[in-house]
Length: 150
Ligand code: HEC
Image (cartoon, rainbow, N blue to C red; front, side, top):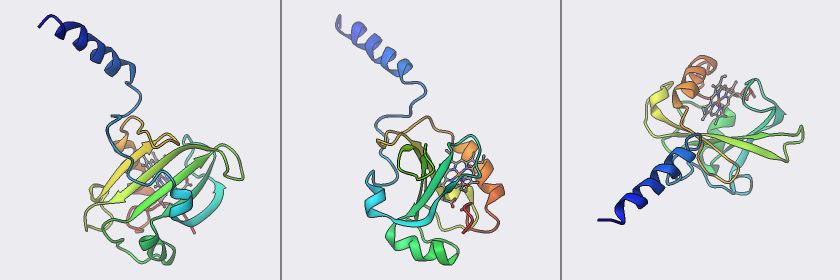
């Protein structure tokens, strides 16, 4: 019983210390080697999304890439879109990753997707799902929640 209190305080401190980061046990929605295993569907360009880094490149899981580039909606369940956010204009130095994964069949529905932000390592950052969906509901233009112009 005696050992419980110190243990408890250590985990409490750890929990508090990691407040801005996400739950470390949450796996990334996408493979961390996405640049090698996913298909590039939008090339390197400046972002339109101020406040989320400077340059971006968009990748999709290989099964979904053709639908993304052709704009055939709705996307299939399992579609995983990865936005690499880079420091430099050639998109070589990754700063963070935003990812969205389709988990429900509904078209143009924020709740049909899972939303995640991670560090380049794949470690999840704090959950800002409400922020993601507020923007993606308005910039999507009938593209089943996807915002990036061709
Ligand atoms: C301020 C508005 C805004 C917010 C907030 C936002 N996005 Fe986006 N998102 C965009 C825009 C605009 C694009 C188009 C690419 C660009 O210009 O960066 C985009 C593109 C993307 C893409 C590439 C796939 C596509 O075409 O939509 C993913 C993945 C993505 N966002 C995920 C997220 C996640 C996850 C969050 C929350 C952590 C988020 N976004 C928050 C505006 C936003």
